[in-house]
Image (cartoon, rainbow over all chains, first blue to last red; front, top):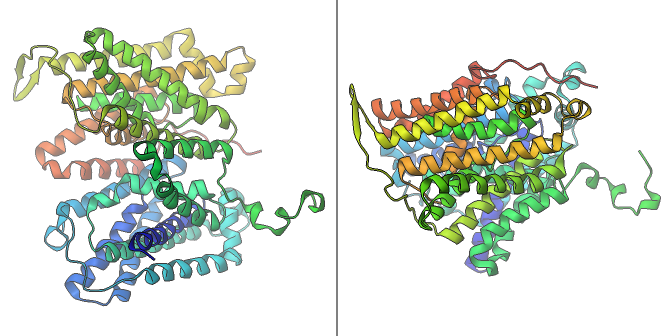
Length: 286
Length: 281
């Protein structure tokens, strides 16, 4: 593989991880557009650990992810009060707070607005990234077949009813936030150690919005949706290079068109059932 | 001053959200288009008094286009769908503006001789006063329009319940289009005023005020024009005060932190009323 393809596939892997990190709270009906904040926490914490403490890569990735998860859980509790667009707004504020925090504080350790240089003691290859992707896909595969997965689905569809039938939605929602934050933190750590340079501007609102777009466009009801969404949105701009300056504008048109064609995302729950693919005649009406 | 800009964007959001329960994320970009169109018209030699209404009409039309492609097909879809679709529009507008007008910052030519007044320790130029006055007039006019006129009443009826309003003979389609147009025009006017007072016009100017406009709307209370005005002023004042007393690096930190607190402590907004949850089945 050429280094261009290698870079493309690494960023694809990181984007898939990020998309899964938004999918996780989304599975309980919470839209988060602040996940770049969790990513920033993971990236900075793990980079500080490898650069200043000289920890090996794996433990620093994990610690970065755990730091993001702790903040995610702390954030998840007050966020329980908020719903829909208010929650989205609160997560957006959270992302901006994190970004400004790394911009203005901890300057001697992280370089602040000048960017964090000097990450690079630890080599990282593309297999690290895809290893994490595979790991999280396995996690979501087993989650979706477990009772917990069913409970998540019920919470997404109707909170009041799921609470009535005895599902602990407070635990589920906060845990979903924490797990999502963990994945985002790990993805941030991988990002920092792959590109060897980070600065607070990488984790701005648009990054968060794009991550959420992967999930919504791909389909937010199954874990395959985010994977497909992230793949399309990472690879599509590369295939559109012949449009040159109009690439961004066309990208916007694609989003608008896709929403009109498939309002609930590319992958829906029905598509994962086998009988969806059997020709119409044999399919039984539910 | 900054507050009135945010207030205008917040109004543009509120008009749609409050009246139609539709969330248009692209308002920040419509705001940018307003400034860019206004600048183009001024460069074509039109006086500002003509360029301003013209640009407002253009942005109004831009909003109608958004309505046609992002909202009309999804009347019964979950609210997330048009939201994403309008994000698509904001990417689209931003890139088109970069391609057509270039990505450099430009500014409005000097349009009146600034005279500076000193009110106590505060320095105010006449330019700022005129802009502030215009913004306040626009907001008062809008508030009166919604509260007093027949069309405004129609808007509030549609906001309450679209189906009932249609049954009672309100032309809901017309009201929706009008509201979109109005929202676009207000956002465009906000863009021009912002461009005039801070003398920055660029394709990327819409993002930050757009997000702060959403924040103002939510802090002030959703779906309530007066709430949007209060929220916009609140955020503008916090921003200016934090720059003055803490330093410019703390600006966004203070703004987003306070918005976050406001959301947690008073989720319905400063002027909001708690809306009963929609009945099920």
